[in-house]
Image 1 (spheres, rainbow, N blue to C red):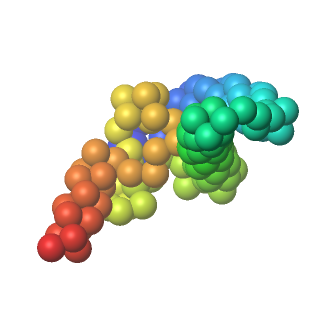
Image 2: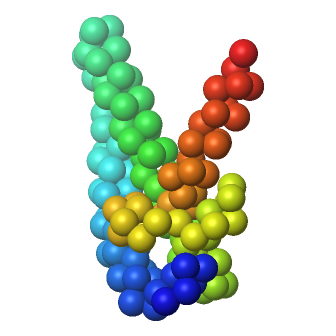
Length: 124
């Protein structure tokens, strides 16, 4: 196997994981949205405050799910275009273990470290 090419078996394994996770997250998204739309705000100010905090937490969870779905869609698109498994930062292959653990990743370990270093540098 060439070190520059991601094996077809690994791509299929990752694609299967991505499709299953996408389905699971879509179900969670729909369930949470339904729960949010059915909430009623009644009671005193403390009850209202608690309800608003719970709604805020639910909306944050929805945003995390939405972001994860977007990353999964990007990964599936990269599979279709033949770019899956290449680091966006270094243009080198992403480690197989990393792809198995995080099939939606766009960065190798080295690429993630480079991005983190750049991000940290910009803060100062």
